[in-house]
Image 1 (cartoon, helix red, strand yellow):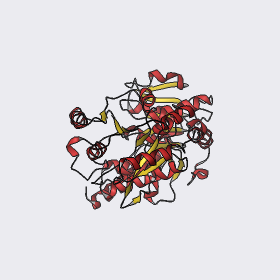
Image 2 (cartoon, helix red, strand yellow; image 1 turned 120 degrees about the vertical axis):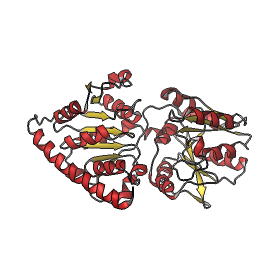
Image 3 (cartoon, one colour; image 1 turned 90 degrees about the vertical axis):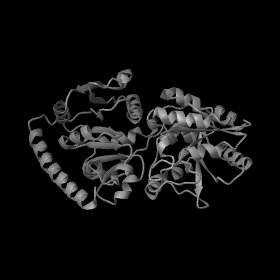
Image 4 (cartoon, helix red, strand yellow; image 1 turned 90 degrees about the horizontal axis):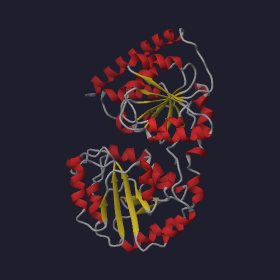
Length: 405
């Protein structure tokens, strides 16, 4: 979509949003404008559970503040987490969703998104106040000239945003209401004893957990994801450093086979099947460090580098909670200046590696930084330690929340 068409569509949808919001306020008059201690969670109609939602629900349960979960009746993934919620409210269609949202009154509605904005956009229109927008990946959508980026911007400008990074700064809009609340750690999967034991190992075990670029895109630099095949080949030259890869479910079967076939050529590289989340965290707790983004020769495009600079992936807390430091690359002979790495530096939980260093120097640097990682710093990132801050915001007025982080 060209820029002129995009701008016209943006203004048309914004105008439509304005009129629908006016209609929603009128309909809202026929509902009891209740306000009590209830907290509502809403998630998109997608397969799979939202890990961030579960993390926050667990912390709220420990505070005796169980939220009420609103989900589509076809979603069964949350059944095993029923004990985390005061109750689960199901809707069958969008009209029922509108009715449920209107019935929440002045109580906070915390909407979690990983990709599908339809239900969230509708809820945003009919929720008159206290709508909290918790979006996983903002930059990649905001900067695309398509319908989804328009919808996302409108929701951001008309919500209290719960942001885990500095991505919203790219919009350069000082009127955006937001709260900084990172992913944090749900459960501690390590101990001081375990941290010390790993330092005495003769080998280094590095892992990568998360999304991988599809194999048919390995030569495409116009993507957000780096060429991980290059990273695999770079690690393959080592004798005392092992690389363990755990791809997300999103990877296609064809790409899985291509990655697997590439990795099996090397003794120090393993490409693993998908693990259940808690089992995965337990397994990686025996490793030394984790990779966030580690390009070797072909760095992704400028937009992708901008994303790396401002974003924060949830994997850093999976690593940290399991007792791993995160490794970051040098770019143009300098340490990368990313929000994620700067955040971890405060807790002695990261180190920088130059691809031109030899194996012994890399091991020496990793061990040096491992010794600095303390269990006390890891515990400071437990979601339970921060949940009071989020609770205090749920019932504040929009004015107080303006630019509040």
